Image 1 (cartoon, rainbow over the protein chains, first blue to last red):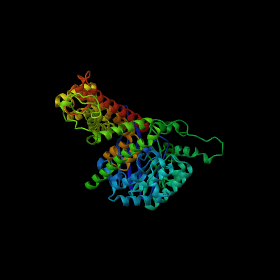
Image 2 (image 1 turned 180 degrees about the vertical axis):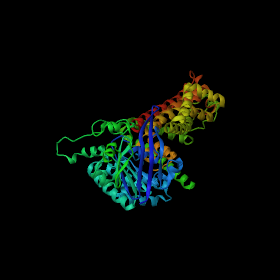
Image 3 (image 1 turned 120 degrees about the horizontal axis):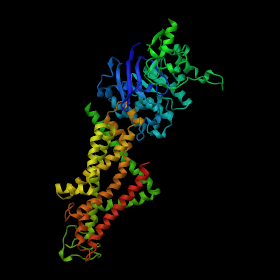
Image 4 (image 1 turned 60 degrees about the vertical axis):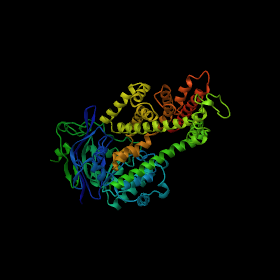
Length: 323
Length: 296
C-alpha cells in the first residue's frame, strides 16, 4: 500500500509565558492509502496537537519546532501559507472536530456552509454544489436532506450536525480525513450509528483516516493500525489485533485493564496510579507511574523497538527482558 | 480563477448584508408587539425618516424663500411654526432640518461604523503589532476631548456640511473599533473559526464572512445610540458656527439664528430645538430596545 502521510520526528511546543511546553515530542507516524489509523491516549497527551500540526492550524502560542510532514511527496512544513490554505486544507486533508455544535457558524444555514466549502475548492455552480451536498447528506444518513439543507445549526441535534460536518469533510473528496474525537460529544447510540456510517463511507470512498480518540473501544473497532500516545510520545504502535490482544507496554496494559467491561460488576477497577507527568524527562516519560520501572528507566531514553510484525514498543524493561 | 473568487466574495458579501438587514428587521418586527422600547423607538424614528425623506413634498414653503414683509410672524395657519427674521417659514425649515439630520446620521455614523468595524476586526483577529498600531491610534484620538477635536478638524478644513460629516466620522470610529475588537477577540477562539481554517478559507473570508455576522451586533446597537450623539454634536457645532452655515436649514444653525430673538420671537429657536429633542429621544429609545434584543 502506498503511503499518504508520513510524519517524521514531529515536535510541537506551546510557548506559555516565554517558557516552552513540549506537547508533541519527536513523533513518527505513517498513514497508508485506505487505512484508518487510530491515535489513542489520555487527555492532554498531544493527540489533537498532532492533528493541528499536520494542518498547521495551531493556536498562536503553538510552535512547530522540528520534523517533517510528508504528504503525497510534499513536505507540508515547507509549503507557503497560501498553498497550504488553498491546496491542502479542506481540499486534500479535511478535519472533523470534537464538538459538532460549535464547529459550524451559528448564523448561516448548514447547506450554505457546505456549498461554500465546495465552491472554495472546486469550480462548480451553486446548483451543482447543492445537488452534491444533498447527495452527501443522504450518504451520511441525514433523513429528509432537502429540508435539512435550509436549517440553521441550532435547529439540528448533535448527531445530525456531526453528520453534516462529516459530509462537509468529505465534500471535496480529500485523500485524508483527520477526525479529532468526533463522537465524544455524542451519546452512545448515536455514536454507534455514526461510526457505522462513517466507516462504510470511508471504505467506499477509499479515503485514509486519522481517528483520534481516548475511547479504546472505538479505536479497536474502527482502526486498522493504532498508536498509543502518552505525554507527547508514542509508547506503542501496531496492528489493532496485535496491540489489543497482546499489549506489551505497561501503559497500554494499564489502559486496557482499566476498562470496566473486563471486570465483575461493582468490583474495584484497576487504575494507573499517579498523574500525567512532565512531558520532558530524561528517560521514559511513563516511568513515574510505571509498576515495572526501575532506575534505568529514569535515566536512559529508548527508541521504539520492533517486537513482532507491525508491532513496536518503547520500553526499557521489555528490551532488557527479551535480550 | 481570480474572477470566480471575486464573484464568490461579492455574493457572499451580498448574502451577508441581506442577512444583517433581515436580522435587524426581524428584531424590530418581532419586538414590535412585545417590547415597548422598540415599538416607541421605531415609530419615532420611522416618522422622522418619512418626514425627512419626503421633505420636498410635505413642506408648504421653500425653506430658503425670503419674504421680508412677513418677518417674525407668530405661528398661524399659514405658517404653523411662524416665520424667522427673513420671513422664511420655520415649519419648512424644521422639516428640511430632519433631512439634514438623516444625512448626518447615515454618512457620519455610516463611515464610522464601517471603518470602526474593519479596524476593530483586523486588530482583534490578528492581534500583535496590527492590534498595537490600530489601538494606539484609537487611544490617541480618544485622548482629546471629543468636541475639541471636532472643532479643530472643522477649523482646519473650514466650516460646512461636507466637512462636518468627515469630522464626525474621524472621531467616532474609535468607539466602534474598540467595541468590535473586544468582540472579535472573544469570538475568534470559537471552534467554528478553527473549523473554517481547517477547510481552507482565507483570512479575509473568515474575518468578514464568518466572524463579522457573529460580532457585529454590539456595534449595530452602538450605532443607533450614536445617531443621537452625532445629531447633538452636529447641532452644537452648527450652533457655535463651525458646522453647517446659514442659510442651510440645519437645526443647530437655526437655533443660533433664533437665539438673539428669543425674547421677541420664541418660535424661531424653539421648534428646531424640539426637532433635535425628538430625534435624540427616538434614537435612544430604539437603541435601548435593540440592545435588549440583539445583544444577549
